[in-house]
Length: 195
Image (cartoon, rainbow, N blue to C red; front, side, top):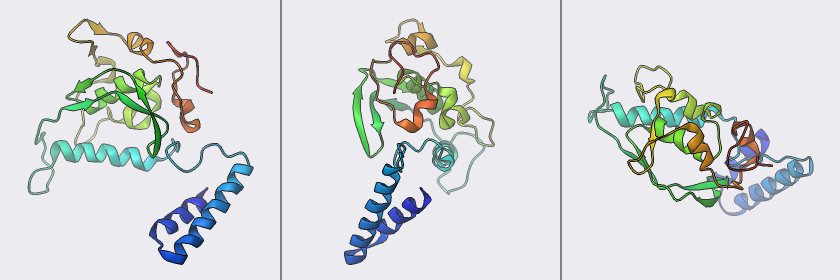
């Protein structure tokens, strides 16, 4: 897998005839992996990557605490409102995601809370997704002061929705990439387990 990723990196930097050679190399390497039964590939289903989620949490900290002079303050420098249109990307995202219309508009002043609710709506256990789980950790620049157990979701100013209520809203047949099946809820509510 590392050889294929290195070949893709070379392909992305190459031009002309060299690019065509690297394209051929990546196709040969991918075919070899496929013939050996590889189902994870190299794109969005790489759930074990520990770099991307850490970087995203750092970007959240910068968004909240960075001052105009580029230094980090000790208190929030701005208020951020997060909105998700809930047309989720399912399957092989982010490059080849298929739309999944959930027919929700989700908003929060806490990115971790929004991600927690979004994970539940897609059939995942948020505790099994590193970026969601670790967003609640204690840091020098915390992203939220909420505990994950205190997240409250409301439907159109209605009563508080429980975690079970959110799970029941998961549509049937969500296409889950092979690398992310371990993050699914153990007992999915509202849909069969992904293959």
